Length: 291
Image (cartoon, rainbow, N blue to C red; front, side, top):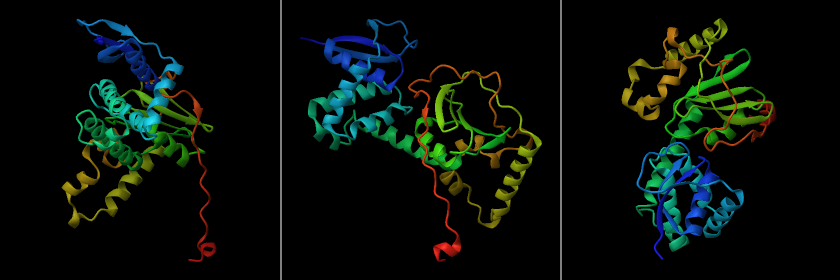
């Protein structure tokens, strides 16, 4: 029996995407597109909304783990990338994985596998860059910053910054995807923020920014400047949100606007949960360490 072609709509979550895969196999349907709710345009194919059912998502997840424990973490990362039509790309990968089994994972050049691999590598590189390039500012006792990533990096930055700043209150706002990671009192949440506006820095914060920029300029060795190497190690697209590259009059502040809503749920974002905090042990003194 030929499989019927259709367009699926889902809620934008990873579990919702797994439910689309479940629906495809149980209903003998082949999706020509998988769209987040509200993204549909006039089309010749039938459009049907697939509800997110945790039991259905769980069955698909278990079947993928039966092939390899590495598949689900890989697909979760692929889901966070900026790959065009990533939902359909993930679906095609899963179809071939079911058909060929574990040996398929060694076919790195396969046309359904390679685009996901490259997208995940770009995502991982961006996460590593942002761990070092994020610059927090202080506003009324709160740490805050803005970023402009290509991929949805907040779920992957979450553990790192909750660990490093476990006794702080902070937020990281993603301008690209209009969502923010909020952390306070050992709990973190990723929420959508459509109307976000930064408050201006106070005089103390402005003075710290000037000090940081002065330090950055002072440690530079003018005779050894290498612009191409600097842009290779610190890509220029990150400069817009880095304090050392901002003019004094246009320095971006770090505070949530009081009118900014924090309700709702970002696409695929986890609900409020205890932050993955691991408190760091205090460093030993030079005498105690024997150095």
